[in-house]
Length: 373
Image (tube, rainbow, N blue to C red; front, side, top):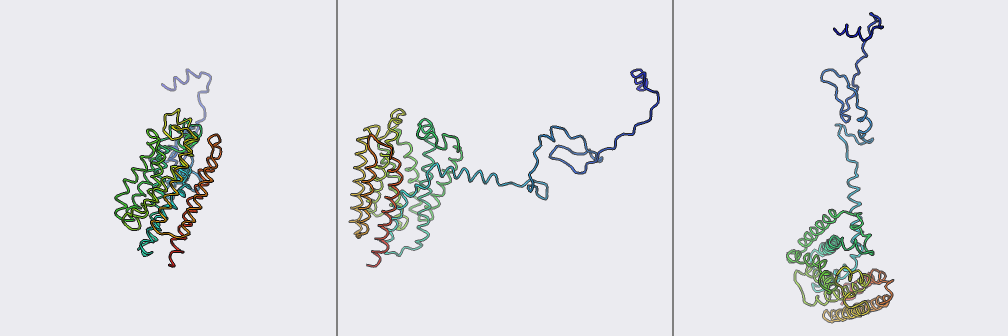
């Protein structure tokens, strides 16, 4: 029947023509499973490769195929992780750990002096004190950035920060906060049992600060106390108990931090007013808030003088207090109610010198000058 139909449709075709031998079946020289190509079972004949498969199928890069045919990881995940970690450290100003760390180390040295420099495992204790201090600050700063992301997006001064700008994900920031909090707990447990028991309370305090600007103008003092806990915590880490005398240093750091935070907050007084946030510059105005800052810094100097007397420290410690007083006077001179252009110099540069010079003078007194007597 097929021959009849063919002759009816093609009347001019010769009735006989030489047979055409079929094209030889293509054999699959190699299988290409990544293109979806598999020869029929038992034939080895390679079916036609779809055009879309050859055009769009990803090709493994050279050097990424293992012997078993699987693909190696090229390290892009690790590079992405390091990039996000670097962005997080930039976001929290990791280098500003220098603000409170010298005061924490001073608390540890004063405790060491009370132990007559016979504290066991001193090197390990100092290491874990530094780890705990840096981890706690990193957790607190990241939490603050997460909580304030919406506010930062609305504030022209902070809109370019990593979270509102979208250069860092909130999910990664939460993971970093959790990791730093866990590291802080690990460090506290490595120090002693009392540190470990107080560690959750310390985390609660430093996380609580981020909420305070929403309901109280005294948030500057709360921030100050967060940093002020460091010397007392270092004392506990070395001695396993708390001596009331070290609280003079806690008070000094609290007032010092509150004073320079007021200066920093002057930049945002108008935004705080529009956003309904609380701060002393918004409540009192910039001029009067700067006077409160000066009073706080005078209170810091008074607390340091009381600390020198309570521990009967020497001339080097007194010189350290004088150096701090000079730097604070210079810091206050940089900022005027009508000119806030030098706030960053007052906040970042001068306060870095305050903490470092304070530590150097007091460490010299505690370790070298007093060690020979």
